[in-house]
Length: 179
Image (cartoon, rainbow, N blue to C red):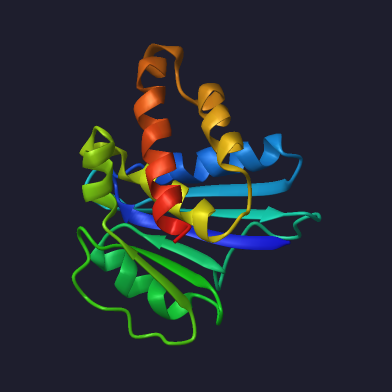
């Protein structure tokens, strides 16, 4: 098993956190992992992406040219990465923000109202957790429980009061992605 994932969106959408969270959870499951965060010049509001590779074997290079999975949280990211996803790969789109339809027919598309589901879970700002849940619903890379439990390790104890709403968002996304 080897998945090459790109999370992409605007700074402030939790793009780095998505990559870090899934990477730590996969590492806790004993998988080989690489994580490379990248910010645009503006940081908040600018473009951001993170690349994560999760594998059952050693990883030769942390760079991703053609992701097997892409989570596009906004229109510019969707336009940039739709063409780069490998054939038979997965593209997760934030339907709450992206109003263009996907053109590819050789990849799986999950067009999910990420921001709306995050609001239903309790906070519109946790769309990143909805997206991660949906990803795990579509591709069983790691367990949902590993992701939820791993958040305790990477979230400052000051914010542990937010863990229940994050868990709710992950579970809501997972349910949507499992359909």
